[in-house]
Image 1: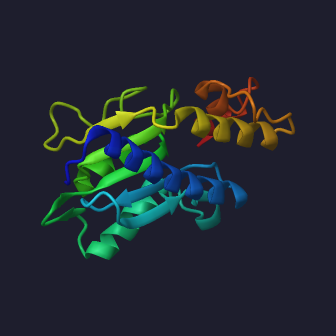
Image 2 (image 1 turned 90 degrees about the vertical axis):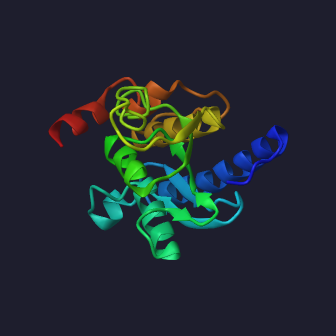
Length: 195
């Protein structure tokens, strides 16, 4: 992976997270929970895969944004391990990965994970579980959290508020837990229990 001065790396990270946010908005426009992801080559600039939640459109419980982006990157590299001679790839995602996605990140050998909003209900990178860098597993990924978290949290909050016919809160972000629950009525939690 190319080493950049910290300010340049921060700028690049923000641009790539904004690319993931474009995918999240496209998912929302299609009626999916707005989560987006991009896989970046070791050069830090080349997008190898893009993903957005597609579970409803594809009737596929594994069609999370991270999985879709990693599938596309794997096809681009002709390898299920997202590695190149220059090093490992980075994954940018708007929401903390779940246990399924964290496991896939490990299997793909992603070298760097950057996610925006924590997921206090299903996050597997420290919020609920620590799947990603569990000490007994043989792969580790560098993790950066919180990049554009407020914007991504607001996108989730507004999605669930709109779904329930409530007033959007565009100017004032809600906390992430409310966004993931879809408001105080807890409907999302009930759906998860039934699933």
